[in-house]
Length: 569
Image (cartoon, rainbow, N blue to C red):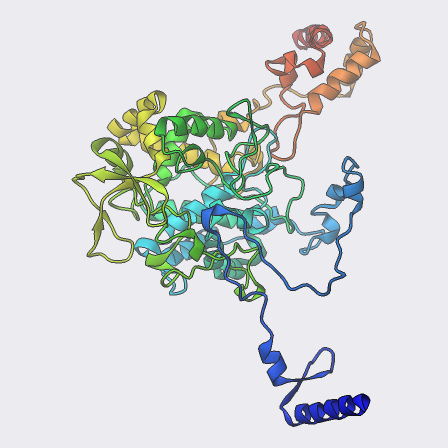
């Protein structure tokens, strides 16, 4: 009897479903009632809470209770040599083809036409992401700075040369918040000029054009940064597993090599101060360490920060929990965008990026001397942004700063904890006061520091392309004197070989010296190598790995041969 009732029930249910509207899946061909589909929830409807700068965690529905994870070879043998790196950005996978020559393409570019198009874009504010102060210059300067600012001298990695800001993890670092909008604004220009301009070059050039359009004279621009087409998986950014963690210090505040940034996901330092402690003097220590590891001395560091913070503003109109996931974690319907905000309009006057709401100068879309004037002519008191971040506001200021979107509104000048470090750290203060009293010296220093920032990973000047590449030799380019003598001929080479073999040096001594001289080359920033014979000089000649005692013996013998040959020829 029970079987009959169950059968009848199923039959009645099937009739009811048959009368309901049905839809057919285009993939499986199966039909489903509309009501069933309407009851299903999207895994992307969950509102993500990113408050307190924690990692974003996206939950997806389990397929079934038997879903399992499994170990891969690298989990069983973590010290196994990873040969996949040899295939990274291989010519065989180049979407442009193995024969593509970027240098040749760049030299056929309408360079000044491109610059004009970028300049026109700067003041063409878009409704989907309005320009602060009617000018995208501040946004593009930050994009260029953060593209180049990942460089560190420890291993020469990072920097702007490969255009890695387009890929994970850099495209989703907290410090790169909303730079996806800057690159999207440039997309029509990239489409227009195609492969004649790489993303790597375009991002830096956009920063340069922004500076120039707002009245600053740059030191120049060199192209030649060929794009890669996949993320660089070989760069070590730190061992942390959560954004903004700082498990990179030992013995107090000793930063792990080769890292330079203070926290995972930051380009440089925490703008609120070390670990959010709003102490300008302590912040100065982090600034000096970080910028030093990125190849900048104190004067360059002050000039860069003051010059960059002459323009634009920081954004922190609301708490972080209004901000959605970064581009890599965002749902597919966001079309590559991240950090979608539900605070107000989510853009323009309501924008949230760093959580800091700071405007430094009274003319944020024009080159001016306002940063140092504001720094020294105001007294500062600690406050918090609308997002709850530590920042500083001027007491009883004589000069106010404009609102980014309402010309009728004025605000008190504001500064970051890291900005005040340039006033309250004794050594930084000396440099800042010099620039405060001599605007021309500041302008020259910023121009050179900006050029170094954006070009230091390109290597020697011989790699530079374009009509605005400066001719001047700069010390950080590791220049080598030009040839001012006849080159050796075949007979000279034979004679020198004989003298070297008769110098009383073993094969091992000669080979190890040659190896030590050449093996310092690294392609990451095109530094090192045998050219220049720097193994004769400090610090290389005293490196323990170079066996200094043996090395000096070989160098003495070779130098004697060199002097004798040059004297006789």
